[in-house]
Image 1 (cartoon, rainbow, N blue to C red):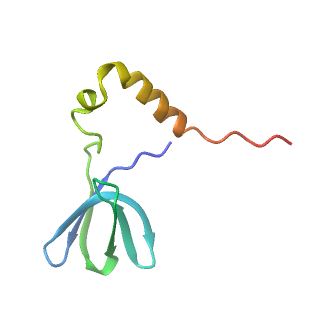
Image 2: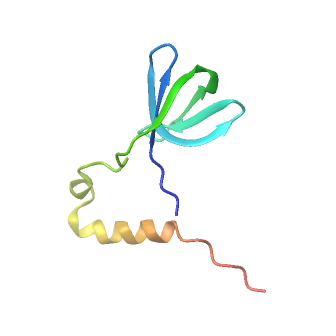
Image 3: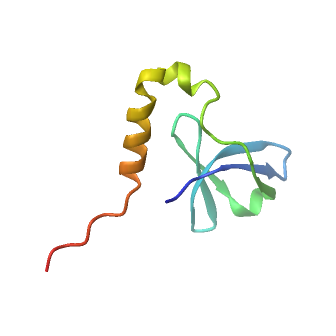
Length: 89
């Protein structure tokens, strides 16, 4: 099961870029912002990288989803991360 943590990039020019690290691509780091939009940052522009210990899950997820729907959300997440079944011979 793959869980992604928030990556925080400190750039040489002082800016800070935060997102979920998706992949490295041709010398660039690709992150997803809070809206799911991909951000591309040149690896050469990064002065420091750290991974947040905080979950990217909103603190108020219970209110957003509704307590009655939490079991459904959990079932969906567990199902969507399960390995694909092996093909029949």
